Image 1: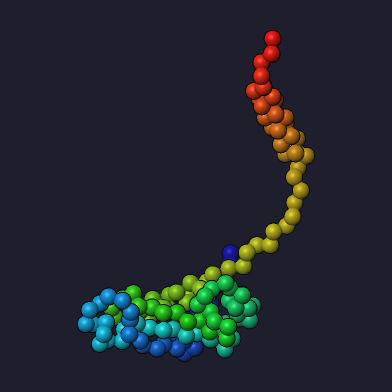
Image 2: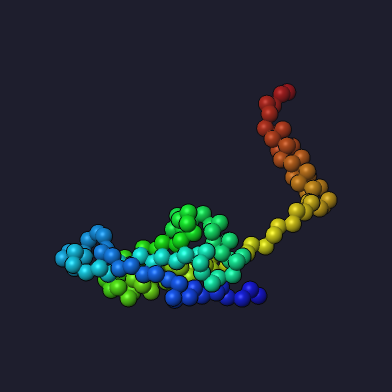
Length: 135
């Protein structure tokens, strides 16, 4: 069984409060309740192999400098948006933590090859019977 993914350290995460976009009336114009989370992968305390897998992920939230930028603005409160951003960062780290099992090339068994050919022959016979009928 694989151990759980490591947690990002709170002091390595940078939060910037910004104004949310979209509908929300007067509240969205006066209150900065959206959050930009910034997490520098290279400067983090994560294991080196996990850092490399994170940097190789095809994710648009990771920029060229190796910084994860997550924008959370789904909730009305700053704290809920902070929690949402941290959860998304944890999910990203968990996705990189999973190492897919290496596939070993195998050959089809003789029995499976025989069944395949028999199926093709039988299908060919069915199709051959669809021809014109001659007396």
